[in-house]
Image (cartoon, rainbow over all chains, first blue to last red; front, side):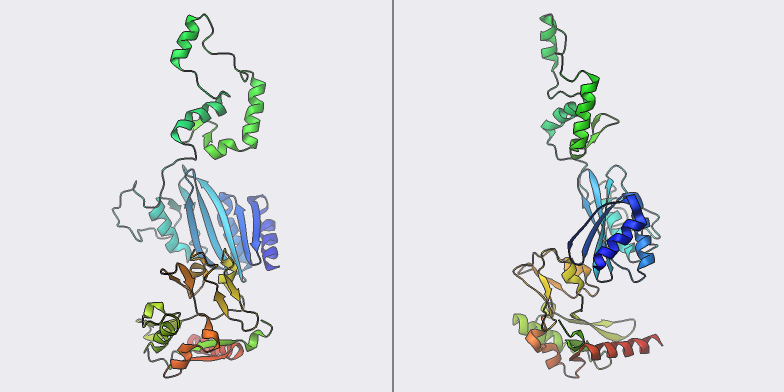
Length: 222
Length: 157
């Protein structure tokens, strides 16, 4: 019951910033929020429940993005605010001025993952030495998606051009010698077909899964 | 548990405590047959700044937050006695209970790869039984609340 009340309150306060809510057990709530609304969510919780107890922040390096899980204890219920940030941004908004207990864990995150924590009241090293190499963070993984190296080019061309296998120079020359155009007429040379294909790709979120950048028309990692 | 006020819990009186750590030895011996302080379910610590003892032990909360957070539902509050216990065959050793508990009362047993905590020694806590100055006692929840209220009022004035 209390879990439901909290969910309702958060929906009312944050509105569209709440993405997904799940309550797998009686006194356990997971709230997926937009990363920009993190501070707003914590402030709203603090306003309604002054006895809010901050537990910890878990950070998961998922390859293409960081997942931040802020755990709170409210009224006998464990609330987890889950927010996702792309790895290129490399930023986490500090909540240490709202809940001071978050100070140390944010310093730890900044140190072990090499994430910049914005507006932290007192940022200095916690575990590692002051002169620790910036590019050698113990828990940070390289920017890499789920695709193995041999599948990356195929996926890239499938999403951007609509064909599975790029044609090699050798075959292009052979086609020219035979008096044919360089590339065979693809089924997706038509713009309308291409639009439909991109629509399908976005719908099944293939581009998100493999980490495709729509602006640069290439994978975020190579 | 139906009558929460009558639940038997432990209380700790720092004024009486001498810091002998008999409670820890009794606990470790009862559960693991060793005299290892690190294998006790409760700990007595000494605060250098305040020059005072403090014990860290499970309070068997009315609404255990460890049970709410446990991902495998290994922790449950006994309906009859009110004891909060971990089922070691269900525990997956994720240490969530240790992080969420305000006192970090559960501890991680690396031999068995499970979390462990005070199980109230089946009704007869050995720490209370062996405490020479009776700083740790078994009382009902009602008395314990009165005692801690008095203690905190004294501390705040």
